[in-house]
Length: 349
Ligand code: ASP
Image 1 (cartoon, rainbow, N blue to C red):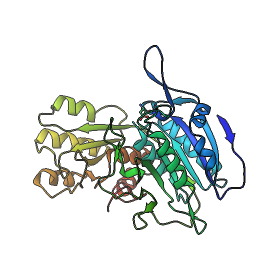
Image 2: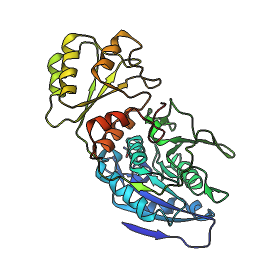
Image 3: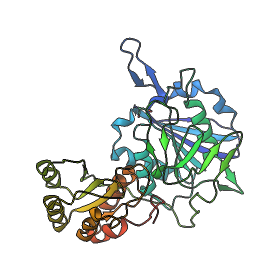
């Protein structure tokens, strides 16, 4: 990892962590493929960074990655970087590919308990070297938000995504567009801030600060499977997924308000899994709205079996919350109690 430090007495301080993604990619002259490049070239592209009244330091991954190669091991590295630098900086900006940015933001929200400073992920749809890049605005405003202090206190104290003029709670987002600059949505929770001529914060939506000290969780368990329902899903395939060896939890991607087929073989497979101690979490395939088990006959049986409602959690939050809770060395009963609870503002309880 490289450290670049720009000195001068400034109002606040921000640590920029560069993991990779399109923002720092270059086009290969021969193949035309986009590949990550050295971070030093990135800072050269944005001389405006030196004009901030914010002391900016940076850490770059030795091997920047396309975020499709993101892995829980990298989340642990990121959590440790934040922990080790927590006292030195007022805020953190993570430059990250947009493809899995919502997963990383969600994971970090669970891993960083009692966070009292901003951790803002951003990136871009076009590399920084391209004239029409969206990367410059995203990066500059993300740094400004991360370095904003109001009466000595950070304006936001949670893990966020800043993209295309909007600041979102990270664990409420998903990437919904691969070609527009406006790549993220947070349908079940309002934006925390909007950047126009001024940056306007939605104070009522931001998590309340805490007086507790930061606690980081670096044990994650990925023994999770996903079963996405569709009309006509076969017993053979469903059973193969549910009975895969080593599975501890299944995310059941259901229809509408959390509904599923009532065919006896399906209910029976779920019952067997629950009896074996496998946790089943009900997440809707709808991008907006909430799971209400028992609203329709087609979800009442799930409730009776002990399937857990994921309420309005995103798929990204569901995956990372399960990894976090399974890594806690607590009982299945305890995990089942915590899953439907609001731990980091990830669901409406
Ligand atoms: N494939 C890239 C990544 O996620 C896309 C991006 O940066 O937007 O790393």
